[in-house]
Length: 104
Image 1: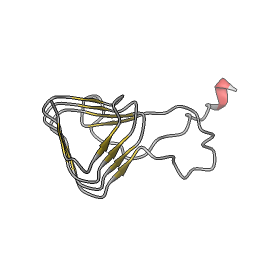
Image 2 (image 1 turned 30 degrees about the vertical axis):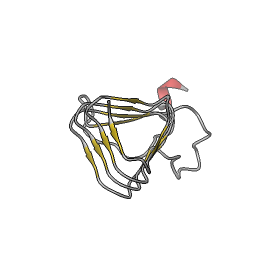
Image 3 (image 1 turned 90 degrees about the vertical axis):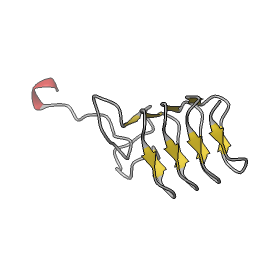
């Protein structure tokens, strides 16, 4: 069973490995997956669509997976992947990839 501080808020729909630690005041939404041995610092906010791999250390006061500040973002479903191959780190959601001129 994950070690979740009593003052943390973790959605029952989030998938946390049994060896995950979540510190006080962290907030974890639905549709979040966190791998073995990962530590989530205090006052961290993790939005839906985030996937965190094994043995990752998320510092306190971090916000991961919020909407990007790009004006082209229109609310389409996106994901953030951290700490597991093929990607090693990513902090913000991305917008849909622009079309190449030959694909228009």
